[in-house]
Length: 361
Image 1: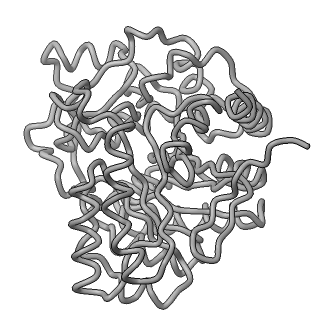
Image 2: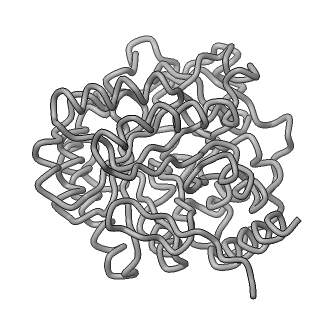
C-alpha cells in the first residue's frame, strides 16, 4: 500500500494534493496554467496584477481593461476545469478593491493577498460570497497584525495563510540585508507563524491552514516543510517551466538557460527588493541607463514613477511576450536547477514521487 499524500483543506474546499501554484502576475499565470494545475488536483492561481496590459485599450482605459481581462481569465479557467481556482492580488495595486470584487463576483475559490498588509480591504462585501481569503506574509509579526486587525474590524479572520520566505521569485517582503540572514529563513519563520495563528484558531473554532512558500523546489522540500508543520506549499518557479504556463517560450527558456550566478536581487521601482534573472536590460539599469516611459496610470500605489529608471509593469509584460531586450524575468532562487520544460501533469507526478521517496526514508 503506497503512502497517501495529505489533502489540503481550506474551509469547505479540498485540494487532492497540498500544492498551490504561485500566482505570477503580468500574464505569466493565467487560465492556461491555473486550470492545468487544478485539473491535477492542486490549486491553480491566476495572477491579477497587470492583467489588462494584454488588452488593446489598456493605455487609455486601464481600469476597465484590468477588470475585463480578469473576468475573462476566470471564466476561461472555469470552462477548462472543475478544480480549485484562486486569484493572486497585490495589495499595492491602485485598483485592488475593483479587482477583488471582480474575483469574488466571478466565483474565484480563493483570494491570495500579497505585496502589502491587507488591512483596509472590502472584506464586508467579500464575506457575502464563498471566496476564501488568504494573506501572504513574510513574518509572524505581519500575520499577527492582520489577524488582530481583521478580528477587531471585521469580526473575521483569514481562511488560511501563506508564509513566503526570502528565496521566492519576484517581489520579496524582506529588506535586502534580511534575505541571506539565517534568522529569516523559511524554516525559521514558518513555525513562528504557525504559533501566532494557533490562538486565533482556538478563539474562532476555525482551522487555518498555514502554507509554506519561497524556494520550494522538489517533492522532498514539500515533505520537509510539511514535517515542520505546514499544511501545504506554494510553488511558482517550477510551474513556469511547463508547456501550460501562459508566458512566452523565450520567457520559459530563460529559466532553462540561466546559471546560479545569473539569479540576482534587484531594487524594484515598487520599493521592494525582487529576485530576477540577470540580463542586458537589468545590466543597463544597474549602469544608470534609464528606460524612458510614460506612466498613463499609477498602477501601484508604492511606485515612484517620477524617479524610476523604468516601468516595471511594462518590463514584465515585454518579458511575458518574449521581448527580453525590453524587459526581464522574475524567478525564484532555484530557477537555475530547471533543465527542461515539461507538462504540468509530469511535473506534479515527479513532485509526488519525490515526496513519497522522502517520506519512506
